[in-house]
Length: 113
Length: 114
Image (cartoon, rainbow over all chains, first blue to last red; front, side):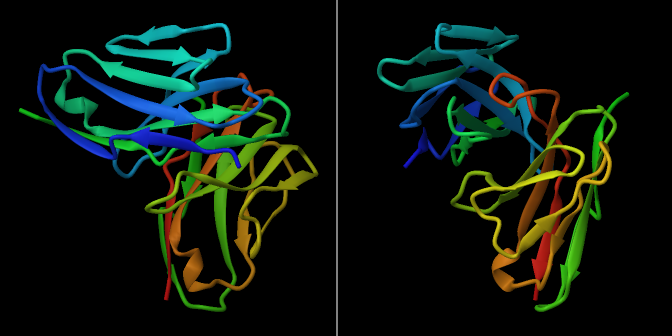
């Protein structure tokens, strides 16, 4: 069964600090991996998308990495801001299964001043 | 600006009633999707459509139906609402194949079935 596991489930960081979120997946075959940001009461918004051949991608202060061999990804937030408080969702797409996106349960990040 | 909207944003209904949630997008995307989001679960796919008159079942489609009569709209119907269908529902759209193209999500509808 395709699964996406994220850790930690939640974390609290101080404004200005960095943090790293983890994503492990067992989706096979693999097409691409995406990170979404979901603010409270809103729909998810795409941050990055990486295919098999990409091992890092940045979007402003967000940097995602992908190790397709170990089936792991991370999302690094640099110099966190209060507006980074949100849930971050890792989503993996299987290439041969129709419209099959497997969503992780998300990591809830709270940035405190 | 192009957008995707959902209505209503909040809905309370009773067990056994039929409920329809609306989704409207102005991106002119062919692909549209309905998901539900529950605590302890990631987003789960209910139904999806690749174009007008095309509909497909997702992993949690029991008790739900959709129809696609035009490009802009994909309404989700709960035939006979059950308490297990209390959830937050998200509609999304994408331009092409979802493997490489980003899905754009609506703001969600919070549905409570009493």
